Amino acid sequence: MITHFQWKPLLKQSNLPGWRISFFFNGVHYDAIYHRSGQIEWGQTIPPKDKEQLIIEQIHELMLFHIYD
Image 1 (cartoon, rainbow, N blue to C red):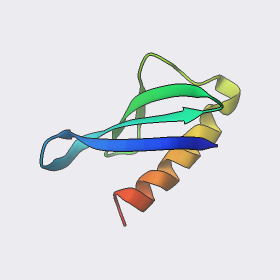
Image 2 (image 1 turned 90 degrees about the vertical axis):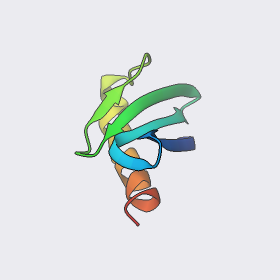
Image 3 (image 1 turned 180 degrees about the vertical axis):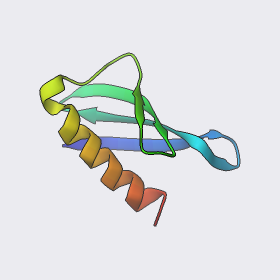
Image 4 (image 1 turned 45 degrees about the horizontal axis):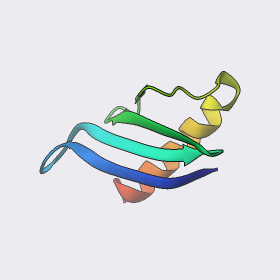
């Protein structure tokens, strides 16, 4: 489960071209860029392949709640 989810626009006063996100998953800190298209560009820490899809689905839900509400 994702905890401590944070987001902010890449550019001040604009939701385009995307958002910088950060969160913890199973005690590991992740950061990424969430593009307007829904594509996620991982930072230095990349999730394990067996958990990546679960994390992506949770991020999409959180972004829908926070950004597209």
